[in-house]
Length: 381
Image 1 (cartoon, rainbow, N blue to C red):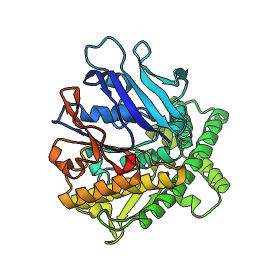
Image 2: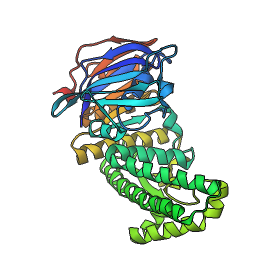
Image 3: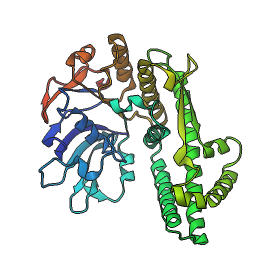
């Protein structure tokens, strides 16, 4: 995998033009007041990986107001094979994203996964264990995307087939052959999605159990869903047949409600505080935050072990709700990961423990100021 050596933004969110250079492995701190543009930089980085980034934004939503030229994010990636330029941007005439790798256009986002793997944690995710299954399912799938880029293709095939089936049913077009073909696509892709989730959660669980139980507690993980539950009891081929039967039987109901009555689009990720044997939704706010951080760290270690290098970590305002001891412990863990880690915060004092080991940038009203020379980080040695 690769890390960012340089990053530039053009007409992106609050930035006309901005650049960050002399980057590399280790900790990179962006600090400044609320609304200064710190999270916008993290979002720009997240868009270098497949998907819609950490905000889930549509293409036009990233455009700087009153700008007549489409936004663009360009990066120099440091890879084992040297520097590789990569860029993404908006074509305002089509409202679509344009992607270039090594100066050449590419057709699909999935090609980005060969070069960039990102995982992020934002304040909006603090309610992950209290919100509905949809958010936890999206969180799980994002973790899998970073680990197994082909998961995105499975999800796309399933969702496209389910959307086409729903349209046919709602329009009253009960063409049996057409519906059967779409349902076959759903069953094959759906069972593959559920199998990938089960396999990944088992791997992530092992990574969680291998970590110390402090300062971030171990989690017990499980996936719960109709297809996942069937896969625990029977071979995948039998599950495909049963899922196909369920889809055929639910056509009348699905014509009214939309979607499908069952399938991997209803899966939930179950998380428990291991030491307390208590569901994450029943834990305190501080415990939930610690569990979430522990999951992100376990995921980074898992990717590092399986793929040879950890992902780029984007940690937005992560230090704000941690005490000084837990902050210091987190920084030690992050340095030991050997990853490129981006941290944001409004209070520079939150990062005093790493003032000599991190690269610092001050962000204010869409401008970027370098605050220190290259740090003496263990990740640079």
